[in-house]
Structures are given as C-alpha cells and as structure tokens.
Image (cartoon, rainbow, N blue to C red; front, side):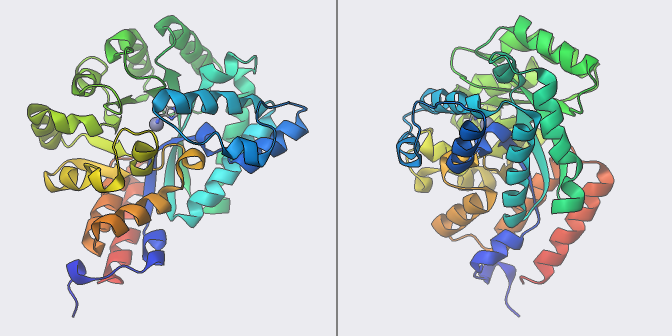
Length: 344
Ligand code: ADE
Ligand code: ZN
C-alpha cells in the first residue's frame, strides 16, 4: 500500500478535495467579461472599454495599485440583478474548485459611496446565496467588510444600517489599504459588532507590520486573521498564534500578484505549516489574481510538491476555521475523510 505522503496528486484530485473558502471578496470575482457585459447593460462608459484594454490594467505593483482598479470596476454594479449575477458566477466557479462552504465578504461602504443603496447590494448578493446550497452544493456565510482607509464613524453608520435592515450578515471584516490604518482605529466598530453577536475577522499582516496582527487580536478581539503572512517576522507572535491556533486565511496567488512576496517559491506558507500555524488557502480576489481557490492549491502543490496529507491538512483547517454550524463542519469533515481514504 502507498503511504499518503508518497502519493502523487492528480490535478483533479485537488479540485475534488472538499474545502471551505474563508477569504473571498465578492467584488474581486468580477471577471473582465462580466464587467463589460454589466457596463453595456447599465450604459456605463469605462475608462478601459475593451477587453484588451481592460486586461492590460491587471499588472499590479502593490495593494493600492490593485485597489484603484478594483474600486473603479465596481462602477458597473448598479442593480440587485447585477450583484446577484456576480455572486452566482462566483458560486459556479467555486463549485469547479471543490468549494463546499464559502464565507463571502462584500464592501458595503464602497457601494454606498457610489450612490447605490445598501439594500440593492445586500438583497442582490443574498438572493444568489439563498439558492447556493440547492444549486451549487455550497453553504455560505456573508461578511460585511469595512474599509480601513475610511473613518470609523462611516463604518459604524453602515454597520447600524445593516443591522437595522436585518441584513443576513454573520460577521464583519476589515479590508482596503492597510498600512497607516491600524486596527486601533476600529475598536468601537468591533465592540459594536461583538455586541450584535457578529463573528469577527480582519485583514492584518498582508502589507502591514506584525503588530497589526497582534492588535487585531488584542484590541479588536478577532477570531480569525485574513492573510497574516507578515506574522512570520515576529517569533513571539508566531508562538502565540500556534498556541492559540488562530486561523490565518492565506492567499498565495494574491500575495505574489500584489508583490507582498517576490515569487511563489518564496511564499512563507510551507514554513507556516511546518511550525504548526492554523493556515488555509484562499483566493482573495480571484478575477484579478490569476485563479480561484483550486488554482491556488494547484500552483502551491506544484511549486512545493505537496502530498495528499498536506492538502488534506489545509482543507481540514479551512473547514474547522469556518463560521459554519457544527453539524455542517462535521458533514464536510466526513467528506474530507472519504476523499483521504480514496487518495491513499
Ligand atoms: N479588498 C479586496 N482585496 C483586498 C486585499 N487583498 N487586501 C485588502 N483589501 C482588499
Ligand atoms: Zn482580502
């Protein structure tokens, strides 16, 4: 019998690996083709109106250079149907990547700032999510992410609006330009969200220093860290993250495309696994970074020659670290055990 660690993984083994995606911006799933289709439907003239011109913009030097295009492209999202179409397109692609549970962030402030009603964004996304289990076999959780380069007052105002409309959000996140916008800016926001019974996550240690990771835990009380790769620069912090098994939602292709790491070969994920951090693989903004979660697994497995036991560990971490109900986690862990048995 072949031991799991000697198994060479067939490419579709990684796609059939049951997994949860915990770090995904729904606006980052807008593919160029859909951007142009929605622009035409809504009579919007984009600065880069052809596929060729638009695609030329997908060369990034850092997080901000990506965010500029990401926010500009959101201009095509006008109606509930637009938000629903974007979300359904993601779910369909996620299914092809073997995603069985997805925790989906959206940026409510970015839409309100463009004059789009909060209810339009929320209802459109929620309509697509409502049929996700039946249609795509993917359970979902919706997370409202707040823009850290905006004020805490703006975030609190939008959070109150989401709560009073009964938006089906399970948690909050913190995203956008990290450096210069530390967790300490959002203490009241996280206190209010916790009071409302919401789950808490935040981007930290993507471009920002390790102490942003520590402060997200200490000051904001987050349960999960999105990215967290720069934590490896602080030995004491790593020891704490290992001890507390804080989930880190790592996004390898994103990190390379935004130049947070130089190359895939230089990515700290293998080292993070070795030291016992609770890491999982995610796609972040797959339409911008060269692939969905399956492509992230593929690229890393090929780069580092991962075996079945390694990818099983990563998929298990994603399921256990999710905000899914215990019964759903058990179901997915049982599926994962079945996958493992057939890949030994
Ligand atoms: N918003 C969308 N993608 C993001 C990322 N990778 N980092 C911070 N904010 C984001
Ligand atoms: Zn992100």
